[in-house]
Image 1 (spheres, rainbow, N blue to C red):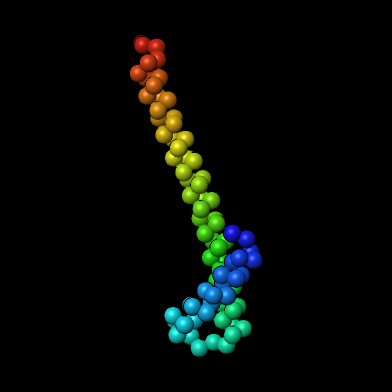
Image 2 (cartoon, helix red, strand yellow):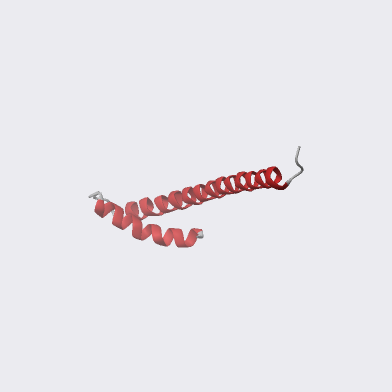
Length: 79
C-alpha cells in the first residue's frame, strides 16, 4: 500500500482511535495521530511481512535439503 492510501486510512483511524480511547483532541491533532499511526503501522507491517518471507524461504530451503538428503540416502549409491 502506498503512502497516500495510508494517509487517507490514517485520517479515519485517528478519528476512530481518539474516540475508542476517549481522548479529547482537536481535529489537527486527531489527523496527525491517525496519519502518523498509519504510516508507522504500515511500514512496520511491511517489514514484518518481509521478515516472514525470508523465514519462509529458509524453512522451504531446509525442507528441500532434507528431501534431497532422504532421496540420496534412499536411492543413492549403497555403501
